[in-house]
Image (cartoon, rainbow, N blue to C red; front, side):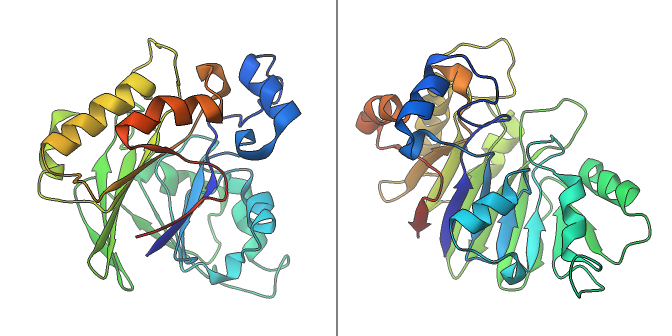
Length: 268
């Protein structure tokens, strides 16, 4: 299984649209790994995780083709993960297709928003629920409960195929105990985990900063959910976190954690 990080930035990317901060200014002048689109990922070129406003530019940038998708998995309903108006471009009159060529898997909030936008359009939409698994082709997928929006079942995703396991954990703070306990039944080859707030301590508990990432990873390693062969890669970085890519490399190096970047391809 391989996972490509299409975007690794938070809600307004890096540099931020109107960001007048150190991280945005550095990214504008230095480019490279400090340029971050809104967060999304692609598994084996067929499972798209989230559909941000930057999806088209990400596919073009990395020479990928949305016609290869067999499914889009949504984590939650925030605008930087659900660009609902973009879904229409797969169908007639924008293409020759008369039926959406991929299945949508999402929580009730996301499904409701898509169905309200396209009430009579031909689409396969499957409602997902934390701690209830489902199969898609050769993949077994288990949503687990994230800490993000109080009145929504925001989901992190366990994706398994051919004995390999990925835990994709964007847009979450410290998990509830229910999630930590549930994860004890698993061992992961790869954890992709958000680090929105960088060096900053925030009063909002629905995202992680560097300290939170280390807290979560330490516990997962202690519980055997991650072992010495497990890779840990970060994503969903916000420019207000005051952390450039080089800062993240420096801080995380001693902890065996790799800062993710747009276009990063990870094979497990």
